[in-house]
Length: 511
Image 1 (cartoon, rainbow, N blue to C red):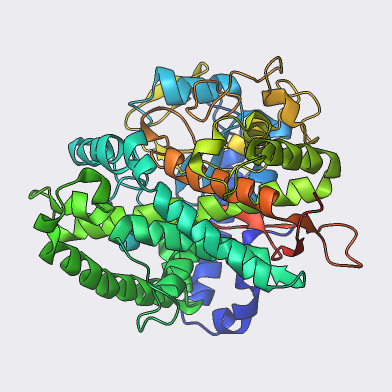
Image 2: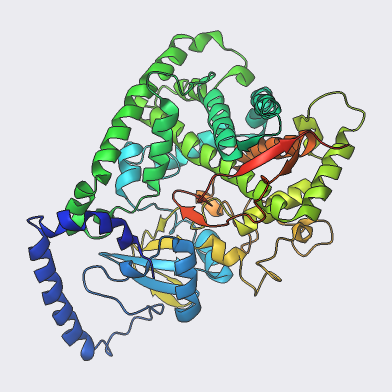
């Protein structure tokens, strides 16, 4: 099985000649024999009722069993060892949850105890040691920031105030596609730029293009990649030197400094003009954050980066997966096109936010795409605050908690033919018609649930819905000639996306 250690193969020569290599190997051998001899008489006297675990190696534990697509490899392990499974990831204990009942117990019944975040290298460096919302440890500071996000930054009213931004940026994509004259275009790149630009304008009140001196978009892209990278030092501190050897530490430090430096300018610009904006609808995320005198600059930067980390990747991966599934299912695409075009009949204008509320089939398509392809198949890791029990099993304090939302949403116990794309599940009369994005039904948790659920869902969905509806209204999308089947290969990062960019032809609709 291809594992995360495949990432380190290109550095094998450097590893062998590194001064720490042979001492590490020697220590590994000693611990292996020590572990083997101690396990042969094993812990029959241990009265703790622990979840089942796969066999593990010394030092690395079960790290060698985490593949390049962890949501899939963990699902395979859970099918063998149980939907509640305890892994040893280096020095960390990790509880892997692939069960609806356990997910409910963690995110509702014992939500407070499982509301902490583990301290991991990339998120700590990029978000000023947890001064944001997504990766911050649980406590008073986090509660204050989360409340501000929910009540002010990302409230339904605030998201509605960004409709002009959405509509203007969507129109730019339409104009680019019209200029393509039905030639092959990279839709992934276009939608990613759209997601970046709407988030930029919502955050700062203006865009920062790729031609900008500091190349903010490239820095954000690199930061998103690093948030999804595997830092060996997070799990085996004694091997953190390998992260320096592979260049991960260098890349992290470089992009952290770039982002820190870049964010100074727009935040300062907003500060200068802060008192000129009296209408809440005219205020950007930064304007609202600056009004709180208790917020330090580091916290403001960290929350702004949250918006990009959660916004850009979620919007563009959602739009891409929806279009991919529709291209693979022509009948469903025809139904979406008919619904949108019927809604727009007699209206001499583009699709707007006002038209979306009546597009029930489109909304069902989006929900089904999120079921099959949740942006973060493994929800952002949690950590237990104190010793507790889950489904009768003992769970220690400071246990890493990995909730496999993808496995839960593809569980045949709850979903009929889960591998099939069936939007009708979410239509009136369908088996899942009442499900929404709030995580109240634990077999459907694309954005998590409870205290640590994603507060940016309304922002992401609003931007994705408008883009998808517009594409369905303005164009007949098809694959390039000779491309009969889409490659569905995935690549994992902070979110899971298609490995290859989506190349399409956008032709004028044949009304």
